[in-house]
Every structure is written in structure tokens, then in C-alpha cells.
Length: 177
Image (cartoon, rainbow, N blue to C red; front, side):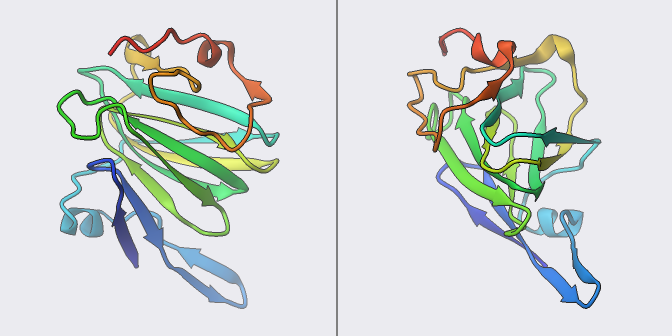
């Protein structure tokens, strides 16, 4: 079973999954188009990607793709734990420039659905953390952009300082919105 919890950011949902546990371990459905459609979420993944993060304190993001190559994503932490953050960059949204966070882990099985126009990033809270991205939209490197994790325009409260971050993610300019 998959359930959806609305967040303060319109269109962003925490996706709750149910584990079926037996002597072998567990089985968990991460995505079901019928369940998404029944909650009026139009999402058809076209790509699956995964990041493996060796060390706690690894920061990835905050990323998005600009129009006309915008993406929607379902983020699931398969192993380890992340502090997952989204920022609403849709100028017509009542939550414009607001952020939301959720702790996703291999243990809790939660996912986060990120609609178009919302930037996404995370910091790992454990070593050896694996994150699955189910993505609607095709990656276009010319449209791949981001906002800096500590941009004062957003005031995101991270649980720790990053210890590993790419040069690109460190150097995004201040948000001009």
C-alpha cells in the first residue's frame, strides 16, 4: 500500500510505503501509477538513477532543470539516512521560496515526491547511503541548474555542515529569483 501526506509546499508529498515482512526479509512497493493517479499526481517515470554516498555529511543539491526540460522526481533512500530538502521556485506558488525537509531512510521507507519547479537536495546522515531517483523527464545538461545549499534567500536549516560537496554545488550564485 502507498499513502500520500501533503506538505506545506503544494504538490510535494511524503510517500508512505508499507513493508510486507516475512522470514526472507521484506518486500515494498515504491511506486504504483494507479495509486499516484488516484491522488491526482500525474507521474510517469522515464529514468531511474541512484547515488551512492560513501560518507555522512555528503551534500548533493539543490538541483532542478529549467523549462522546457523540467523534471518531477520520486526520491527514496534505500540504505542509510538523508535529510531531504525541497525549495519551491515557482513564482506563482503560495509557497514561493519556502523550503520543506523530511528524513528519509532505508529503515522508514518514506519517499518524497518533488514536482516540476521545485529544487531538490539532501545531506547524508549516515555513511554508505544509497538514494534512488525515479524521474519523469529526460536529463538535459544544458538545462541542469541549481541553488546554493546555504543561500540566504531561503534560510534552510541543515542538521549539520557538509563535509563533502561538489565544486559546482558550492559555487551556485545567490538566487536572483
